[in-house]
Length: 221
Ligand SMILES: Nc1ncnc2c1ncn2[C@@H]1O[C@H](COP(=O)(O)OP(=O)(O)OP(=O)(O)O)[C@@H](O)[C@H]1O
Ligand SMILES: [Mg+2]
Image (cartoon, rainbow, N blue to C red; front, side, top):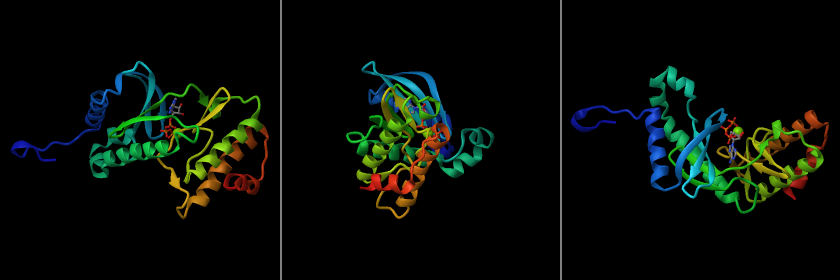
């Protein structure tokens, strides 16, 4: 970017965070930031306090280039234009959650600004770290959500024990930027892959075995 008097400016990684944070303050969404509660492969997750004193979740998208790569190899960052990629991911996640929220068990989307998305905070633990008393019941609940998602015209695309939160007897499906529409060519393959991930997890952990064809039929019917 060329500024006044031909001086060159480059928007840094931290600068982009500050701009998004300022945007969230200006829109009166966030009043303060709390602890970091998650380190995803391509995101940082913080608990934040909203202006209405409610705890929300702030997910900072870091897609496009890994944070470590940015620190070690700054010129790469500018070439890859990661801020467009991470902003698109936040918007994509908002698009998915907005379409699903009234129909499917997902966190309510509150707002986005650049690569930031603020979400309803779910009080639960990742399926991976929960010991289920009644795995059959939870498996059916998850497949029911997959069915509702499919009938809203969408497929998650990265469904696994890492992207499902268990809040007492409620399952909540999180992490949506890679979702696809069910009319896309690769939707069937992606749906089967999502279902297989869940089936494999329940088979490994709880010796619960199902037939892919039967589960797929249930989802699509
Ligand atoms: N709405 C939420 N409420 C509570 N905790 C959340 C929420 N969203 C995310 N988290 C926490 O942050 C973690 C990472 O979130 P998410 O899966 O959306 O990000 P991610 O970067 O895609 O992670 P990964 O790349 O590892 O899949 C979750 O496993 C969960 O512990
Ligand atoms: Mg995830």
